[in-house]
Length: 358
Image (cartoon, rainbow, N blue to C red; front, side):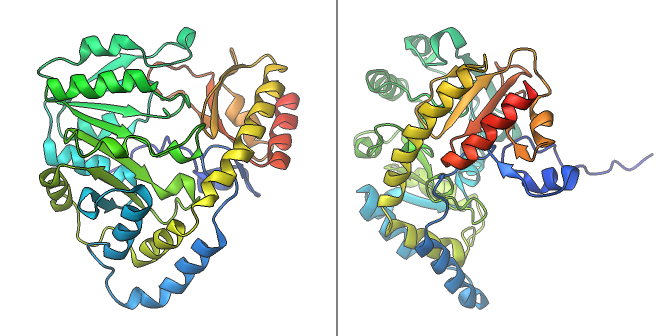
């Protein structure tokens, strides 16, 4: 009998610049990760560096100072917050804690929802979003919010489409999930970098214990390597179950220090939004002129199709530019791609490279 060898699952997300460098060499201009185009705030960088000396001690397992800072910024109660090793950590904890029988996700959307649910044996159903409707969520989803469904995952703005769930529809979903005892999980990780960003659904927590929000510092403050996210819920028992499904020290001292410093930089995402809106419009105009099909997103990234060009990622990599292939997203094909909105000089490099390869 041959012993089965363990193999890591293929990495399909954005931001894998190490593999790109190993394959192509040289520096990589990364459009595959949807981060704040302004980069990391200086205060956050300084706080993370200063925290290194404290790494001779265990970090605060309760993230007390960070939780207090989040509560003040998001205007919620400290008891409604649970911090984790990025939002993905909390997604997997939620799946482990609840082990739901039936769950609904949209398609296309962030793959970690289905991956986490599938890992615990959940039967996962997909609600298809259509290109002809700009991949918007419509009232059709209400037909699927019936008794027997345990969890609904929504991403707003959605990844990879950049489209937000319209407020009136979100209200209907929130009400119907409550009526049918469905846990509504809304991923708001890109909210702070999207058009018209505001408090999101946080003000609705107290009256909707069936609502759980996912948020992260990764995108807003460009710190994906530090891994820091949190969830919000008025259901204290649920948060306790999530806490018990992870290790006590899931958030490092450096990540906690960075998060506390980030809470002192509330203008950072706001300044980024101004840049994003200007540059996104410019990219839309330039890419449309190249006969690419672009969907008008509302966040810091754009979904587009290069009809018949399944090799576009590889062609751009040869020129030192990494974009996100969306071939692994349910409902999209091998010629769909996603790019982050970057500073103007970098966006110009992307457009120049696209002109060369198309």
